[in-house]
Image (cartoon, rainbow, N blue to C red; front, side, top):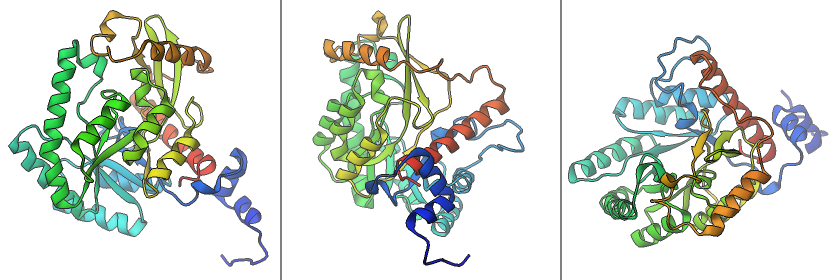
Amino acid sequence: MSFDASLTRRDFLQRSALGAAVFSFGKMPEVFKNHSMGIVVHSYASRWNSKTPSAKYPGFKDAVDLLENCHQIGAGGVQTTVRDWTPEIAQKLRSLSDKTGMYLEGSISLPHSADEAKRLEQEIKTAKEAGVSIFRTVCMNGRRYENFHSPEAIAEFKKNSVAALQLAEPIARKLGVKLAVENHKDWRADELAALIKQISSDAVGVTLDFGNSIALLEKPMEVVNTLAPFVLSTHVKDMGVREYEDGFLLSEVPLGEGILDLPEMVRICKKYNPNVNFSLEMITRDPLQIPVLTEAYWPAMQVVPAEDVADTLRMVRKNKFKTELPRVSHLSPDERLAAEESNNVESLKYSKAKMGLS
């Protein structure tokens, strides 16, 4: 295709696929241009290692399949688990990312023993061969209000988290990579910020999840403002909310359909880390129940001020999702795969048009 010098920028945008999306959603802010939106592996929770026979949505057997699919739908990179990568997988990922210009971020488990520290070091070395330099991690798999039932259990969790990071930090520093601890419905924002300050290392920062902390009765923008100074990677999502008898329901919804001010969150992250990648985590599942009106929720949540409870419940009532929150448990496996792909594709379209993330 030849370039017509008489085309204005507006003409060019209107004739391009991206331009059509931009004009359908409104003007794209200049500050958001030329930054990639990738996809977190959890956005493909159904398709990852899926055994469902599907000609249209075959299961991903490894990270190479994930990266190839994400390239096909226009994502800028992936954040994915690195456990059990072989040198051959690392070589294929490096070749594909070099060819496509896509970024690669890892997701890795913290060590809790000397043997696990050796495992961590080997996994990082292998992933580095693929070009990975940022590794998202969590201090626990689960939710604070479900996993812990006393203040003492929370205190033990915090102690163990510090110990795990103190095992991992020297390895990351020696290998020249970054560990990014997610706010994973475990730490409230001020607690996670205090943890990062306690570790006090350039090798340790935050994976900033835009929506998780609503489950811990935190205001999303306050979470972003608190954690953005430490941001190394992100989980971009939008959230829908509705009341239910024991509290409120919380659900990932396609970008632009929920309550989060995504452009402002992106702007704040880029203020502190201009090179941060933005990775979509659109988990297609039934809504989570946040049982704040039950006794079981509170033994691990005694740090929450009363005003945060009231503010969150007011926010839920004010921003009630326009329909019932999406559910997928009633769908067939193939229908669930189709819904997952649709949510991811629609979210990427929105990010390109409204947020300038491609």
